[in-house]
Image 1 (cartoon, helix red, strand yellow):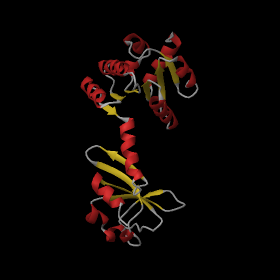
Image 2 (cartoon, rainbow, N blue to C red):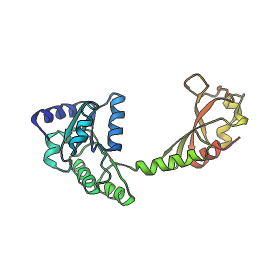
Image 3 (cartoon, helix red, strand yellow):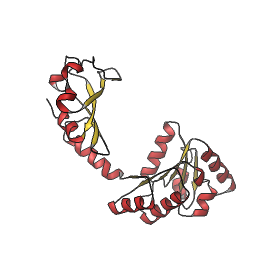
Image 4 (cartoon, rainbow, N blue to C red):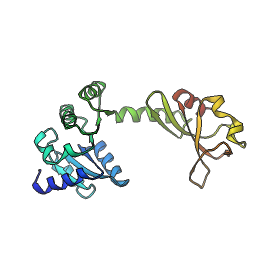
Length: 230
C-alpha cells in the first residue's frame, strides 16, 4: 500500500542513480538483487504483500502497489526515474499496461520481460526500447554449452557472440600475433586466464598455454567453429 512515507522515499530514489523494478517474481527479484549487489539503489514494486515483505530487507525500498495504476505510480515518483524494468511475465495484461504507463511517463530507458513472441512484439509496438526473453535466451545459451565445446557463451544482437573456451592446439606456445587466429578463423582473442590467476587482456605478444582459457568474440558461427577446434 502506498503511504506518504513510502512515496517520499521512492521520490528520493528517483533523484538518485537508481532503478525501479516493477514486478518482483523470479526474474524481477533476481535482477533487483543483482543491481543492489553492484551498488545500484532499487525501488521494488509488487502487488503481492507477501513478496514485498520477503524483499523488505534486500532492496533500498519496496512498496506494495498496483503497477497498472497511473495514480499509484505517480505517487511513487516513477515518472522521475530514468530507468525502469517491467519484471511481470505471466500476467501479460498487467505487463502491457505497466509498460504503456512507463512509455507515457517518458521514462528514459524501459526494459520489459516477454514470455512469447506476440507479447514481445506488442511491447515493442508500445515503445518499449528493450524487450528481453529470459527463458528463450537462457535456453539458447545452454544449448551451446550442452554441445561441450564451450565453457560459456554470450550471444549479442546482429549475429555476434562472446565465447569462453580452450585455445586450439595451433595457438599454444606462440604469440597471438604469430598464431594469426583472427586471420584464419575470423575471431578475436580478447582475454586469457591461466590456472590460478585472474583474467587479463590478450595482446599481440600473449602466449597461450595448454591449460589456459580464452574469451573470443566474433560472428556467432565463426566463434562456434573456433570452439570446436582441437
